[in-house]
Length: 98
Image 1 (cartoon, helix red, strand yellow):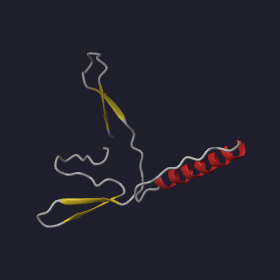
Image 2 (spheres, one colour; image 1 turned 30 degrees about the vertical axis):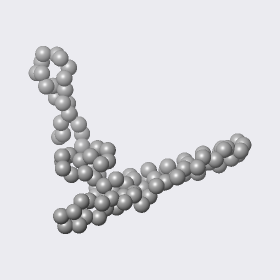
Image 3 (spheres, one colour; image 1 turned 120 degrees about the horizontal axis):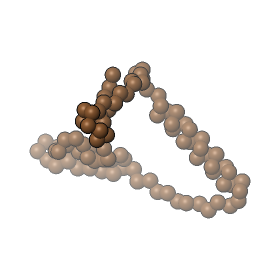
């Protein structure tokens, strides 16, 4: 679910790079503390392009490796499909666990 939405109508997530302050009986005051600025640089030659590609690929591999770590054991559960319409053949299915 994208920020700042939640499954609850009256609760919102704080957006990335933002802090907030709440005082008793007061409003929530937010402060954006991180505003990235991207400054594109022209690619000079093929060697420069290859170096940048390698840097980006290394950063992505590192990020994926870190995100694949889990604090708990991860178990793959087989998925079974069952028909919602009996044998009438409409093709509607629902995914269910073990």
